[in-house]
Image (cartoon, rainbow, N blue to C red; front, side):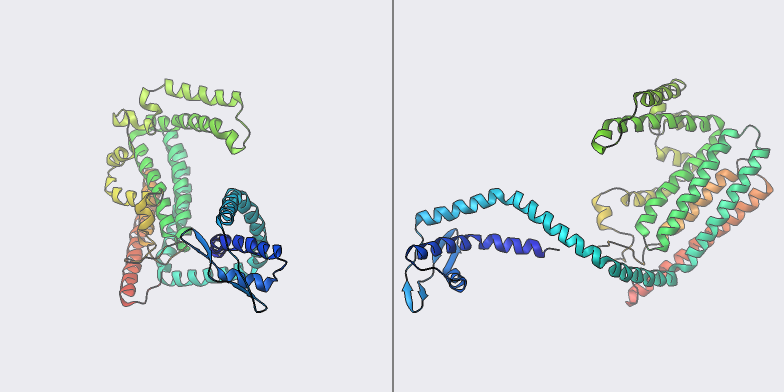
Length: 411
C-alpha cells in the first residue's frame, strides 16, 4: 500500500531535474533545434541536483554536434519558483489524485473481493478447526454450562415468583442481571471459539461487574434493589445531556425539548428521594456501604471477590487504549513479537475460566434469593461444571506451553 507514496516521493525528488530539462529544451528551440523525446531523456541524464544546486554534467551532443547549454541564476530561480508553486498546489493536487486513484482501487477491490473472501473463509475454517483440536473440550463444556444456566435462570425466576413473597424488587433485578450474564457469557464463548482471547477478556470484565452487582443486591435487600432500579433515571439523564450536546455534529435529529425535560424530571425525582451522593456512578450503593462516593472495588470487597482485581485490571487493558494493552496481548505466545491483528490459538484460558466462575456467581445470586431444593441442586451442577471447565482450560493451556517450548505450537 506504500507503492503510490513511494512513486510520489520519487517524482517530487525528480521535479527540479524535469523543470531544468524544460528550460534547457526551450533554449534549444530558441536556436532552432527542437528536441525529440529521446533527446530530452539524454538531456535529463546530464542534469544533476545536489545540495540544492542544479547544474549540467556536460554538453549535449546532437547528430555529432556539440550544443553548449547552461543554467544561469535566472534559470535556477525559475526552477525554484516552479517548485514553490508546485508545493503550494500539492495539497489540492494530492486530494484530486488521491480521490481518483482511490475510486479506481476501490473498483478493483470490489471486483476481486468475492474470490478473496472465499480464500479468507477457508483460512478461517482451517484456523477454527485447529483451535477446536486444542481448545474444543473446555469450549464444549462452557457452552454446556451456558445452556444449563439459561434453564436454571428460567426455572428459578418462576419459582421465586411463586414462593418469593416480598422479594419482587430483587427478583426483578437479579433475573435481569442473570439473563444479561448469560448473554455476555454467550458472547465470550463466541469470541473464544473464533480465537479472540483479548476480546473475550474484555467482555469478561462486564460479566464480572454484573456478577458482583448481583451478589451485592442479593445481600443488601429490597431497599438496595430499589435504589439500583431508580439509578437508571440518573444514567438516562446523563445520556440525554450527551446526546443533546453532540446530536448536531453526529447528524442526528435533536432531542425534543419535552423529551429532555421528561428525562430531567425523572432524574430530579429519583435524586430527591436519596442522599446527594446518589447521583454518582455507584451512588445506588452508597447507603448500603455507608460511603459518599463508592466504586466497584468497594462493592467487590463487600461481597468478597476483590481477589479478582488482578484479572479485572488485565481485562481493562483490553478495553482502554493504554500502551501496555497495545504491547502485551493475551493472544500471543510468551516472547512473541508478532503484531496481532486477528485471531490466534493462544490465551483462551484466563477468559474461559473467569467466564465460568462469574456465570456461576450470577447464578448463585439468583438461586439463593429464595432457596429451594431445585435451585440448590442446580447450583451444585453449575459449580461442578465451572470447576471442570477451569481444569480443562488449564490443561489445554499447559499443553500449549509444552508445544510452544518444543516448537510445535501455532498462534
